Length: 277
Image (cartoon, helix red, strand yellow):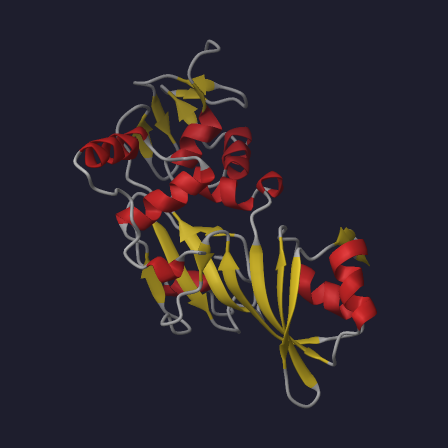
């Protein structure tokens, strides 16, 4: 292939096969072919090229399915994985079935954590929301056993808490009060390392007894979305999310321009309560 065109792993991710990293693993493992020939890492593809994987075949440049975004109120006691040797309940068991695409989880929540979990069919959108360089905000309601001291509050906001895989600093911390031995805090940070909120409070000697993710980026956990339930974003809401991460498709831009010329507002979410104000 010449140096023109799009990288193969990017095309596959945009088509909803999975993240770019996963697509690179597929290519390296020989699970992808282009025009009947085995694909190689770094390969670029042009419009009209036929890309085939074990599950699906696409023609590069053909109009693909529009990106879909699904919100899920994860309860405690479910894992964010399709494969579990212990056969525990999985968040994927509750999701709507797809044909020719698959739901990609944007980040994870551990077994004992509840709250907002986002899924999409767009690997590129998932990458934008998860990659550390984009520093997408995650906000949690945290109940701990005990109460933070003024020194501890200043430490997590200014110096950070040292963990085995590096320090963590909260961008925001609000005291939400509490009764008895339990105390609630609202915290916000811009990274998603494994169990990072729990580990930070454990390092301060304040075990977490309840952890709920209430916001991811501009998307809030809808107040009326009960545990174990899903809610799919409408086209306007998806357009707003894509716009926020810089991935608005050309056709959406064209619709915006047409509606602006007609004196309308395009891409307005149906439920503004889902988005950060």
